[in-house]
Image 1 (cartoon, rainbow over the protein chains, first blue to last red):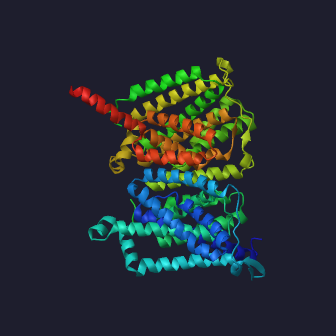
Image 2: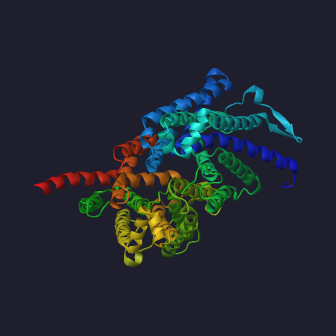
Image 3: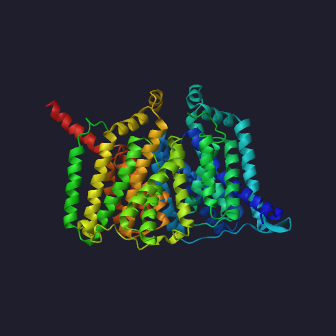
Amino acid sequence: MLTDPTFLALQFLNGLQFAALLFILSIGLSIVFGLLDFVNLAHATLYMFGAYLALTITHLLGSFWLSLLIAPFIVAAIGVLFYFGLLRRMQGKHTTQVLVTLGLVFIGSDVVRMIWGSQFHEVQAPDLLSGSVAVLGQTFPVYRFFVIAVGALCLVLLHFGLERTRLGALVRAGIDDKQTASSLGINVEYIFFVIFALGTWLAGLAGAIAAPVLTVFPGMDVQILTLTLIVVVVGGPGSLAGTVLASLLIGMADTFGRVLFPQIAVALIYLVMALVLLFRPGGLLPARKLL
Amino acid sequence: VNRHADRVRRPVLAVISAAAVLSCLLAGAFGQELLARVAIFGMFAVSLDFLVGYAGLVSLGQAGFLGVGAYAYAYFAAVLGWPTGVSLVLALVAGALAATVLGYFAVRVAGVFFMMVTLALSMMIYAIAIKSRTFNGDDGLSGIPRLNMSWIGIDLDNAAVFSITMLVLLLVLWFSFDRLVRSPFGQTIVAIRQNENRMRALGCPVGRYKLAGFVVAGVGSALAGVMMVQQNSFVNPELTYWFLSGEALIVVIVGGAGTLLGPVLGTILVVLFEDKVSSLTDYWHFWTGILFVSIVLIAPDGIYGRLNAVAAKVWGRADDA
């Protein structure tokens, strides 16, 4: 089994698919953390809302594509609401941020139960993507290729957005040195807002994308939250390249761990994190120098 | 809190003690259960406060060590059938070992990273517990005996005796931590929180002190875990889950971090609130979340800090006159 190239190739694709999902979810958290210095534990709760909204919109409008378009914007709207109502007042106070967003996780977990019930839901992939293709004689769901493609697209867009646009330059300036940036007349508050909204939009997108691959249930947020936090810590907050690398590392370690060493698979990821922190406390590719 | 500026220490201690004695005398069987639960969570909160309020290490994974203590006691006492006293000691040793190994990694990072690392490490303990056949996975272990103290005439299977013992144990633990934070060791820990670079420049082995503080809090949490399984007579992976860590952290902050007594107040508020709400609605997580958010917004320095602020106003005026 271990030397079977077909098996390894399929697992590699599965790992890539999971890494793509982790990337879309983590990059929002990572940039918000790196730029705003804000820890949003409710990020994964927004992801869960994205998945549930995709479920409902697909059901109501009969089109997964529309839900993919609409759900992230609704999630971003919820995020922006919380940003103005609660989170904006907590700049720089990490413990407060963690506690308040943890409270939001508690609230969110019951709100989805109130609206959608406690049962598990399945979302059908759209017809165009619901089939399978042959990979080295084995079948592989097309939808998973779609997830990988969306992850790659997000990476390319974010890379060009950050490196080639004016807003991207402002964001990088903010991550490097917030005070200097704002003393140069950059409206840091406005950039924070845009980044926060983008981060929550990405969380919603990740949820909508994930809905057909994973089951939709209350608790799907917490299930992926720890992995997301590990990706952010391992990659280095605010670092695009670091998040890509860490998503691949964790996605692959999780997928291969599950099939090769099912007994210790869960521990493997934490081992990876422990080793990274031991040798590079600031993450693999930190966006800025940490103390 | 500056000890000289702390005016409410004695009154709060007196009120908590009086309330504990009174409720112990008046409570029925169900009330005794609740009282014991408050006392045990209080031990957990006081241990975490030592870490959060004094060492400045905000852990979001303390339930991991509570779980290690709980599982170790359950394994030795219920599965292997060893004497309960030996199991208790071994459970505390297990807590210390786990805190040493995981703390070795955790204290290398600070601030938010520390929170995330402790969270992840505790989830590793959760994942191991839920996968392990030895610990019966998802279902956990049951039929766990209470500590056999018949040799000094104490029967812990009696609800009232159990809750009194837990209250006394909380008092002992609080007193030990209160001494500890005033000892040279505790003062060094506080100094490192206040200015780590200066302490390092003075030649203090900062990392080693942090790790020692982490282990002390881990052992305290393991003790709370041992007591918790004795009360429930079962243990499942839920006990190591980070929701419990978050709850404990909120209890500490709500009560007032770095005051040791404040977290006990926080425990009383939150445990009683959750008990009431969970009897009224199935959606008690929702209301707990609302409570957390509103309290953090209303009293960011905690109940204890608020009490001191009020006391300062009252006594301040008295001094002026």
